[in-house]
Length: 281
Image: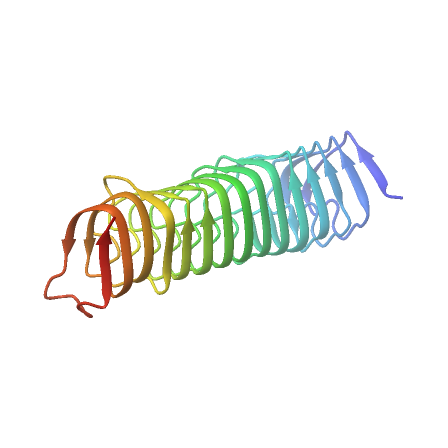
């Protein structure tokens, strides 16, 4: 049975360093560093963090109904088996080098540079704002129910499945590999450049110059907003778009079908003329 520590406060350096199998209830961590470093089996309930780097080198932590204030930057790094539920995060750089991360019903108000170099991530019902560069270099991401405001998301990420998301993100999915997005809205210019095996299903896309320099791009029953001009440049693509595409420019190979296409630009810079079939229904 876990030891329980309730309604206390800690401050300074490493107050609970290298402790194990403890349940914290209603504990406040005032300014200091590395409060729960090198720990395992921690259950943390209704706690408040005002200290830097509280969870580094942790194994198997459950964090429930907690608040990470703006002062708790870089809170959870170099850890394994982290589950956070029903919590709020107001600090940037929240997760780095974490294996086995699960977030449920979490709100992040300052999510810049969060979740870098993490692996085996599960996201359920999460909101992230000011989330520039979120998910950079991550692998093995399973998302269902996610709202993001932040640019450069998922850069260099691999093996990602996204469902029911609203992504307000310039330069999303750059240089990704093996990403599938279902039933989502993606708004932001330069979507998916230099990606490999990016598949979008039942998605609404907005923003100029989407999906260029892609390899093995697939669109199934997607719609494209009126600002999606100059799409698919130098991409190998299989695209079935519902509605109109404003303009298509110099695709490399494959096919593009839509109900209508405003302009097709095939100019002297086309690298493989005739290799992509472009048609309207």
